[in-house]
Length: 372
Image (cartoon, rainbow, N blue to C red; front, side):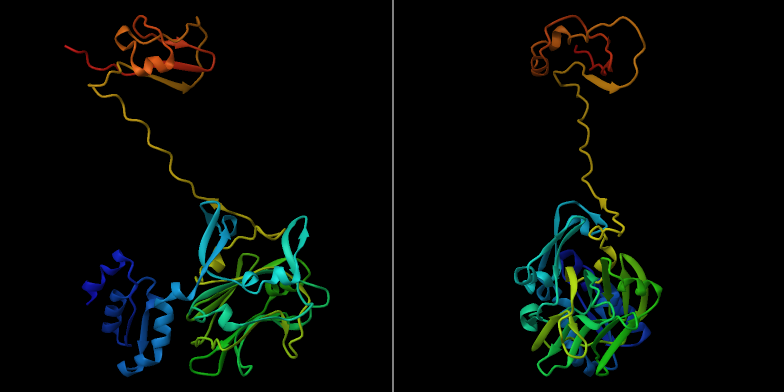
């Protein structure tokens, strides 16, 4: 079986492997599974338990179906080819039509943004995430607190089911200066991680900040202003129930809209994008972008023995010694009338010589073998 699966990657096939947690079998499962192994190898107590992970297998292998394409400007990522890119994910600003509904504002040193808080921003979850969320993803937002919201306890993003039971959320606790990620648990009702500390405290001033969370199978990483703050372990999560609502910016206890400025909020279907994002969109953030360019074209091959060209001129930038200035010589009689000579406008003349100019040295090229 591993040998048969080893060639699957050549055809763009993704494979997952599931089996009991035994060392010998573990090595065989990893040989079968696609990269990364951590996302495609599943351990179960026995083969009957495979039925319990069918949903997770489907979401992992059908990630491209779960996630639409999002157009992202090249400067958003640390490594780019320039221009815009299409990446799988969910642009919540567009899906909620936030700018159309609330209007957008301009700041001279800042990208356009929306002032939230005038009324609730809510959508049906099945309209936002029709197939649910992938098992691993990145949540990224650029925002700033208003004076009235710095000490509020609220959700910048939350999904609830039709009975109001939270499915997943990111909570900003202004009173205790904490960032909390909550999700439905696979083995318990809910699982969560809480981030605190000096770096987290900085998030609660009135400046623009970029908040990013990388949600992976066994841990969650927090990035603030494009710097890793902390990585914490998390217990196994379950997928969300899409029969409910998704909300942006609501208070914890009474669902009152929160007053804050929002520039961007997006969920990528690749958890690594939390680390790859730049902070070019905030005034004080680091903006280091490496632009990948195409390699330069290869130089033309030298003339062959059968070519009509007897020699060629090569111009190099150099410092020429002082001396008598002689105009570059024309090609020899044998090459007069050739296409290259006609394009250059050279008349027929004596054999090639060396010319000296103010800006470049013109050197003779290699001679072709003499014809018999």
